[in-house]
Amino acid sequence: MGKNADAVKAAYDDFAAGNAQSLLSRFADDIEFRLAQGHPYQPTGQAWSGKQALVEHFLKRAGPEWENWTVEVRDLHELGDTVVVEGRYHGLYKPTGRRMDVQVCHVWRLRDGIVRSFHQYLDTAGLQDVMGS
Image (cartoon, rainbow, N blue to C red):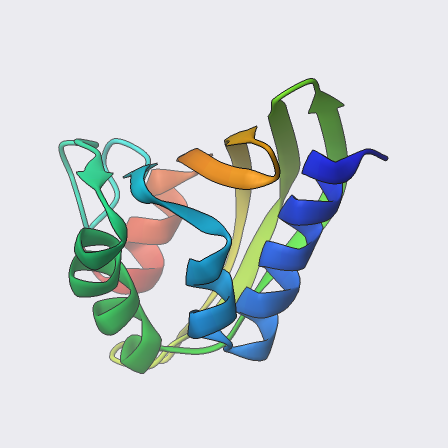
């Protein structure tokens, strides 16, 4: 694996450890962060731009609502400045008490080991069911 795959793996490690500061340090200041269309946190799929938008619209909301949220990486493909990750999300959504086990694919775009954009694709119907949306 190359430096971009290593950077993505480190970002997942930061996420798993709940280390938001280290995770954010891996992102460009103007990161484009896009959840899957139909995701309850951003149903339109419109991207958030910048670290502050990511913190306000996603991290501050998701952090308190989920318990033991993990990303199970099943396959990781490094294609130059793009890294594609196939896997599953697991965790407990505290407001409903339902457990999540949904398919996910992430497309990361990096430059010099810094994440420029993140695009998530996932089983939104499964996620909506867990979240009671």
